[in-house]
Length: 460
Image 1 (cartoon, rainbow, N blue to C red):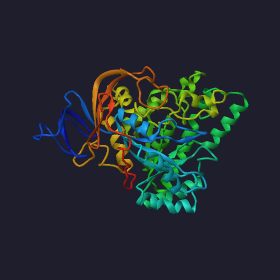
Image 2 (spheres, rainbow, N blue to C red):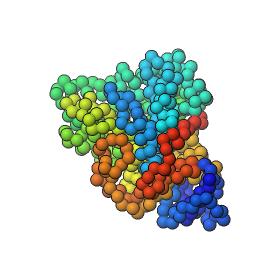
Image 3 (cartoon, one colour):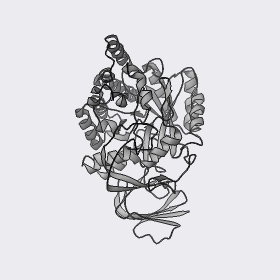
Image 4 (tube, rainbow, N blue to C red):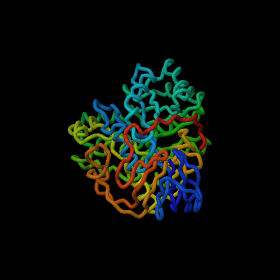
């Protein structure tokens, strides 16, 4: 099977030019102007952008949390990702305390295999680091192709590890060629504030935000980057939200350290004023919470300064009835919001279209950097000879509105209801197969492949 995409504006992290792209089977075979090849299928992309398939390195599909499960399965979640131009996602396996990493892997594999529509990989969240867990790290990296290990500095008693475990994990992961990532918030202070607000009868969604002030994230980020610097382990902060935490990374850079930073599209666009709505505020309850306007400005600047390397989603949707578990107590609201489908379009519309970032920077943070950081480049994240034929044909001028009535995520509300967006994904090609076209999905569940990843480094 061959496919020729003609006359599109081909954009990567470093190039921007009008060209044709020839696909043979599942790989990119040739790129150039007026390619002298015929193909089984031809797409005229005149006036369109041709982008690498997006990579969202932070999603939670079918995830157990607070007595329920996130509402998108591997089928619905990866299909929705494809509709939005994201061809590969990285989900988080959660080790149960007193259980092995292997048990956790098998549990998540059982959910994903035969169900994923788009490609996927895994991070391994280590919640119980001990000698047995330590011995499993080498197998995860070398046999399973899972090279990133998430830690939680919050959620004590369920997910959180202490600093002693963190340093031990970092030392072992460094030796095996992996990376440690962190949910960097101070869980002890947050738990104190949650208990304080509940005791005072302050139970609305606003107190979710007020229980996680900026200092809880800034302090934990400083501590994490210091431990990473001490151990020499490649490190990455997930869903960074605020100026104080970003300054912790800036300080590490001054000391010649390097910690990669991811933010999420909601932290660039939404702010904490949404929590003032006592009825609807639960829609935006996530951890860390939405922040202030000044933090949005800091994050956009951080992208352009090269401090923020990746924009993901932390996609973790719950139906409204699930969110209402906490209607009388903010601490019982399942944390998370839906975003997997809208990341690329929102980032283009609010970033490129409004002049906040360049087109090349857009591709860099949405496609290329995730692939480089997490050991998938150049197979994924770029348009290059021999790379997987993951392509997005994108109309940069098409205006539309986001709504729960039209999205494909398995959730009954939108975090961006009525938001006008400029730019729309028109066609998506996944490993040489047209997956999305004319607002229809043309591949079945099970088409998505698990992507084994290479060892990583602290350089990209």
